[in-house]
Image: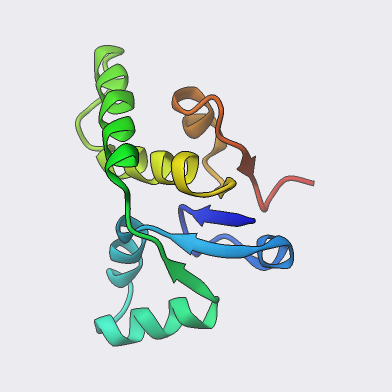
Length: 119
């Protein structure tokens, strides 16, 4: 079982008990912002047993279509990364580990969500 993670700030323990934790390049880049170097970010992700899982063409295109729907509803142009993460989880993992379940449920209805803060 693969879990895509939208943020390593969430606890991956439950997900790791059930399967591999994976993240696309968008998540890896977002994590790197919090570290002094790329090597430090990579070390932190490796400590979490996070595997790098690049986006497929299918996932990238699904992200674009979902983002187009979001913008048609009046959403700003600033959430492209969230759509890439959601589409990656939908196409390339079994579920998404995230605290932001409302957003992802709105635009990726078939995506299984695992919220580490839920009881």
